[in-house]
Amino acid sequence: MTRYGLRARVITLTLAPTLIIGLLLSAFFSYNRYHDLESQVLNAGRAS
Image 1 (tube, rainbow, N blue to C red):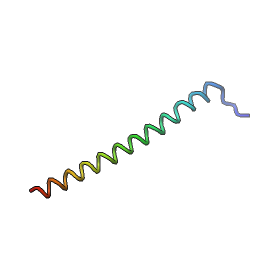
Image 2 (image 1 turned 180 degrees about the vertical axis):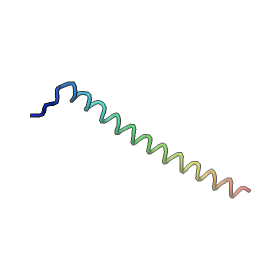
Image 3 (image 1 turned 135 degrees about the vertical axis):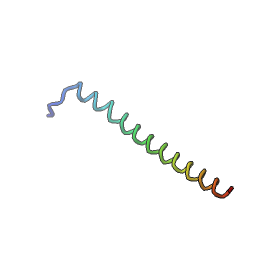
C-alpha cells in the first residue's frame, strides 16, 4: 500500500491530465503557427 493520502491522489489525478493537455495544445499551436509563418514568408518571397 502506498503512503500517499487521498488529497495527494486527487491533486495528482487532476493536475496530470491538465498538464498533459496543456502541453499537447501548446505544441500543436506552436507547430501550426510555425508553419503559417513559414508559408507567409514563402508567399512574400514569391510576390517580390
